Amino acid sequence: MLPFWPDLAFRLLPGFGLLFTCTTLTHLLVMRRAKKDGFLAAIYVQRALDLLLGLSLFFAGFYGIHLSVKYGNEQDAQHMPPVHCLFTALHLHIWIYTDSAQLLLLILLCFDQFISVVWTKRHKEFSEYYFHPGVLVILLLLASATFFPAWLQPISQADNSTVQISSFCEMPETFGREFYDFYLLTRKLSPLPIIGALLVTAFVVLSLQVIQKGRFKWSDNNCQSAKFLLLILCRSLFLLIAVHLPLLALRHLCLSPELVEFRAHGQEIGLRAFHAAFFGVVSAAQKTEKFNRDQPHQMSDF
Image (cartoon, rainbow, N blue to C red; front, side, top):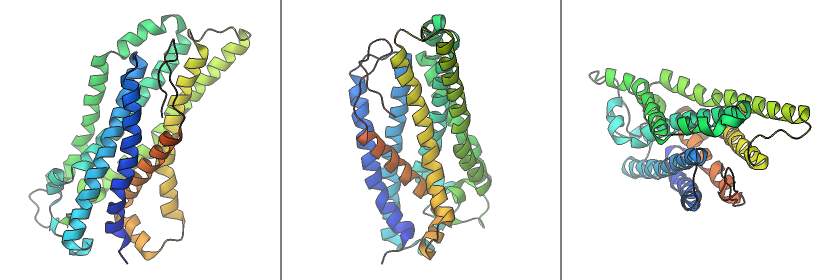
């Protein structure tokens, strides 16, 4: 029987990556044919980041499979300084980058929803500024700032020959436990303020509708604007579920010795696999729907 970690975990990654990549690519191809305003351009970038994450799972899976075939298990694997993993485990960089970029885009989309309610008449004018392609490029560049704290420990230990980690390059060992704990905490908590802001926005809309007896003009198409708000809210909720649910399963269920070992070393692999499977299934099960801010000709997706 193959040990659960790392062999089986890595063997599952390409399958989850295939599911996630195919569903994401389908959405991208449909959206590519549609006319995009600033809001939908940001959604398109989100889906492109999902595609990048899916492809990174392919790389991570085959990277782990190669090492499993070569060494058999993690204990027998070659050990090397953490800085070497910066050049071999490229999927780790993609994971922290896509997480940061997704968070920044969610904040931008949440801000847009707030502006659309508070300054309804000038929303389109304002949105042309913060949905400008240059602003999106700046956000994507800012997301790369996460690399600096991640690389700090492995680079600082580059000359210390006594610090050696497995060539499987688990994220906590590569970037340091302190960085990983903070990084994981950020992923667990960051969707909560966004969800709270979206709920406040929804409450304001509902209050204005009640005050104006249903005549509050949120946009040219109130129904479509409500779908946009629900789209961002669901995305935030799903990001929350994709982190908390597998963590609860790993930390509070009665686990076999293999799963205890997996929790200690391969937790991040499990989180990524669950994320890809969860979003892939949701996207596959979702009914294809076209939407646009003024005319519903675009496809909504999570």
